[in-house]
Length: 448
Length: 163
Image (cartoon, rainbow over all chains, first blue to last red; front, side):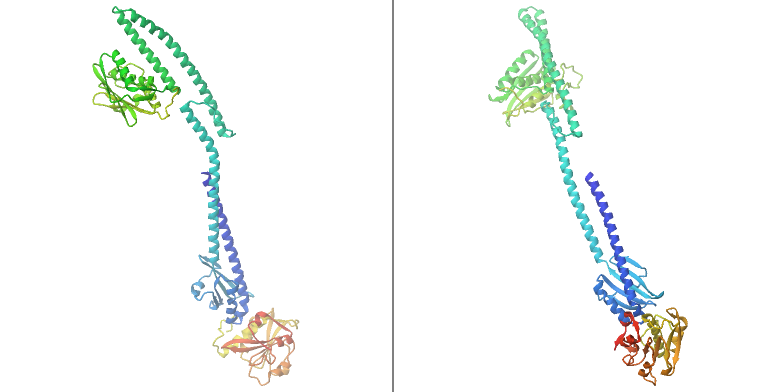
């Protein structure tokens, strides 16, 4: 933008300069031609007085050598008749020439100069000169060409300068921006380095300070998670422990039933706390994966049977085309995903119902599908259900839970470089997730 | 009617027009010749030997013009002996007496102007001639020098130089 303004200003300056220059040239030309006319007039006085046309014509003929840019010259006598004439080219246009009565007339390619011949206050005749302006035109073109050249050169130069300066500034800003992006991904709060003393330097400083605060807050939060986790879990473990004991000890009803129900709630509470903590870890980028090799079909079978035990109302079936292939993943977390999906499938298909788990392998990845025949998911909620705290808007059924399950599943699957999504069915829904056969070293992992 | 500057084209003249033109020329000669001697003359004298067709036009010019602010007077001389000082002496053609005799009687400082063939060669400072039907004049530089007159180059460039 600034480049353009300065170029425009420069252009204006050039225009003014050139115009003035050309005007000056015109003026000087006029004056010189005028002088010439005067001299010719003076020299022609005697010729006019003695009516010697030949002498006057001879006088004019000298113009061919001394003033090559004069194309026509005429001396008229007192009555306005042509006394002598000169023409550079064979073609003469003296008629139109004579019409010019003004002292100087500019007319595009030539200009006319008319001077009176006066001697002793007696008017003897006129000298008319027609001057070609080709030289003028040439100079004009030259000047404009030069100006354009200079303008373009300065434009180029300014651009170059601007680019260099901008690069210097942009480099620093982009560095900052990139670091900011990185922080979002990796949670690495190392300060950005910038030696500049200008506004960008200030920006970087402020940013670093801010990030430092964030880092400290993060530490506090992590501490809190650690503490909370421990503090919440400890009494819960105690509760579970005693309930387990009671479970084993009690055989009579309704005692056993009461114990069972308490245990269920305790387990639920444990899961909820675990989910919260997981989400917290995901938020601060701290969810770690423990990659190992395991038989995915076996895992599915185990999970289903464990679930089946606590879900008497539903029938969970496995349909698998797998052949003992091994998966490279965090077994516990994948199990968690499957459990979540099964839990949802049962929750959202009340009454007696069927749930099918399909497992195949195609296109270099494992594909697991959990099919339920329940309420189904409305089309517009297909992506939102994977967001934090999202509960389906269908108010007809009260579903328990924080709405965190699918959010955690998505994070886990994404970290494995897989995909998770839902498809509507006529009755109910199908939740899919994929897992690459080989991790390709991209999954964020620790251990192993 | 004689008009200065030449409204009358020099081509195709009648004798009257020719005389008018000669009168004009004679007057114009005064602008280009310097008379250093005889400055004490209060008038500018143009003398004519005998009668001439230019009498009328030159008198006309004398009435309305001056030379260097001096009044012009015309003098006529019938015989060479009668010639007194004049700035310009016009010697028309067709006379009985020959040029030489006349010139012997002319003082220094007189611009002698002839009007016939060979008169310049015979000693007149200037001489009218017709060239292609146009009125021109010859100039004898020696005669001018002897007469002590200075003629401007502007005049001489138009003259046919004769010595």
